[in-house]
Image 1 (cartoon, rainbow, N blue to C red):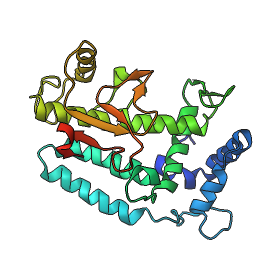
Image 2 (cartoon, one colour):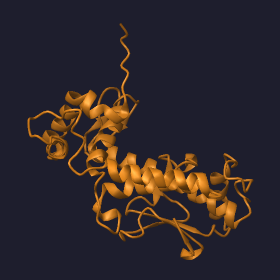
Image 3 (cartoon, rainbow, N blue to C red):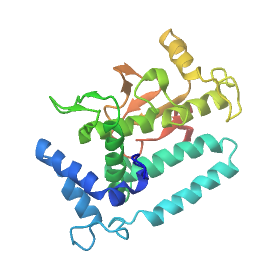
Image 4 (cartoon, rainbow, N blue to C red):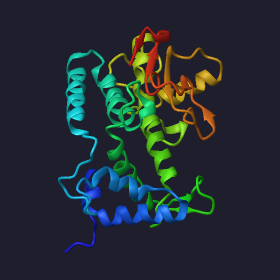
Length: 263
């Protein structure tokens, strides 16, 4: 027998139901949230107090999910820069926009229930880290076995999707910003920062070098990434080419050359 816990992050609500729902219940008592009700309303389809393996959410994520995944594979296989746009599409159209009615012009939220699972899973993973003070709930700490507030886990999940990092020094190429930056540089700037027009080859220091050049007066690249209010900065530093918006038609989209091309 092993004392190491192995788990599937996508199945934690079902495999570790008592753990996740106990966290939700404790969070409700401490902060006045309604997480437990949200979980049960979303997944307990027969109202027996248990979320069974065949209960996958009332809103029906799987049919649109597989349709969008097929489009993602089509982008990857057929477009010259499909690796970049495909990654952007997956994050924006599958992981973010359908989780909130205010983040898409159709007012859809068929992934909202599963976003609960994704956030709770991240909260568990954060509890295993070194942690620190929770900026969203006064007096609360997280890490070393203590779970963070739902607000903090939600903020970090969204920031990671946009930038792949919590710091402007380590923005990830696979994030929304990273893919849009690479595409803009390779197709509009001859790969001057990334060092190549090949979609699979980019200088690891290119985003950091780009920020330095812009802060010193260089012209920014011709793209704009639209994000929700409060997510245009990292560590209190405004990120070049990022604009905050409440427009459902713009949020989590990237506009190139003033809107001549839109992702």
